[in-house]
Image (cartoon, rainbow, N blue to C red; front, top):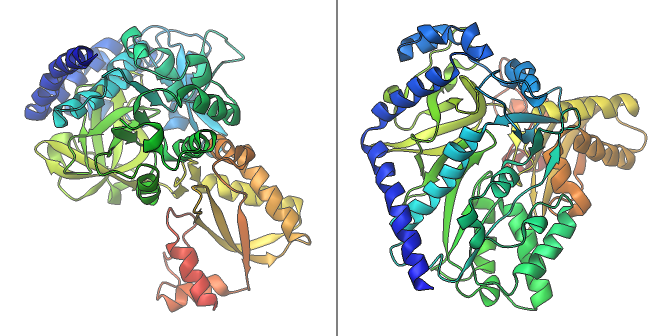
Length: 503
C-alpha cells in the first residue's frame, strides 16, 4: 500500500504549491478574498443594509461596516436557522456549529455555509496534512493506515429540522470527502454518538486493532480514550497498541499542561505534535514545521482578517489594522469576515505574530476572562451568573472570588474556587454542589466535560476570611484604582499566591 501513500503525497503537493503562493503574496491574496466576499454577498440582507455595491477598497469596507459580535449577529443567524435565505451569506445555510454561550445563552450557534465548510474548514484540514507531508518527506501516514478525529455530535434544530446544529468537528466528519473516509476510523455511527462515555468505550474497542498513525482532537478527550485503550488491551503505553503512530494534531486549548502526560502515553521522540487553529468560526492557522511551535496563518481559505490592538478594546472608535499593518510581538484581537457570513466579527481570541514573512502566529489568549484548560471554555459571565443564582437560592453573599484549574495525575482536572463570603451559606457542601450544577446548566462545554466525571471532577471550593482579597491586593501593591481581583485564569498563579498569603 506504499503506492497509495505516494499518491496522497502527490495530491497534497498541489495544495502545498498554493500555500507557498499565498505565503509569498499575502496581501494580494487577502485583497482578492475581500473582493470575492463582498461581490458574493452584495444582494444579501447584510450586503444591502451596508451598501456592499459601493465598497471598492479596504478603506470603504472599514467605513461602511461596523464591528460585530455574536449578540449583534444573533437575530440574523436565527433567521438563517429558520431556513431564510440570503441573510448574511447567499443561499440557504443548513449547518450551524455550536460553541460556548454568551451572557444570555448557554450555547451560541455559528453559521457554516457550504462554501465555508468546503473552502475553509475542510480545506484547512487538507492544508494541515499538506504541511505535514511537506515537512515529513518520509512519512507513512497513509500506508495501509487509519486516522482518527475526536468528533462531537449533531442534532436537528427543533424549530426547523432542515437545519442541523453541533460541534464543528462533527459537521466536518459528516461531510468528509469519500476518499477521506477510506482512511478514517472508527465507524461514523460511533464517531457521532452524543453519549461520550459510550462513544469512548465503543471507539476504543473498534480502533484497538487498527494501524492508527494519527489522531486529531482536544487533549482532554484523547487522554480519556488513551486510558480506555490501555484498560482493554492491557498494554503499558499507546505505542504498544499502535506501533506506527506518527503524529498527534491538537488544538482548541493550550497543549503545554498535557505535553508530559502525552509523552508517557507515547514514549518515543519520533512521535510529533502539531497544533492547528480550527475554531467554530473557521480554520485559521496550522503549524508549518517541526522547528517552531507557531502556526502559519491560512490566507486563502475564505477569510479576510483584521486586527485590533489590545489597547483599543472598549474604544468607541477603535483603530483596526489590516494584515499589512501588523507588527511582531504585539497582541491583537482577531476580527474575521468570512464565507460563512460573519462580518468584521470579533471571535474573542487574541493572537501574536511571530513572523511577518511568512505570517505566523501564536494564540495569546482571550479578550475576556475565561478558563479553557480542558476545553471547557468557561467565561466570567458564566461564573458570575452561577454565583448570583446560587447566592440568591442559599441566601448567601460574596465579596470576591477567583477560579483556577486543578491538574490531576490521571489526566483529569477540575476547577478550584476561592471565595470570600460576606454571608456564608448554611450548608457549604450543598452550595458547592449546586454551584457546579448551575455552571453546567449555563455552559454546554463545561457540562460536556463534567459528564460522569470523565474529563473534569466536581469543583472544589475554599473559603477565605473577610478582607482577605483586599489585603492580598494591598500586599501586592495593587490596591484601589483599576486594580481588580482576577476572576478566572488558565494557570494556578493566583490561587497558589492566595494560598501562600493565607498561610
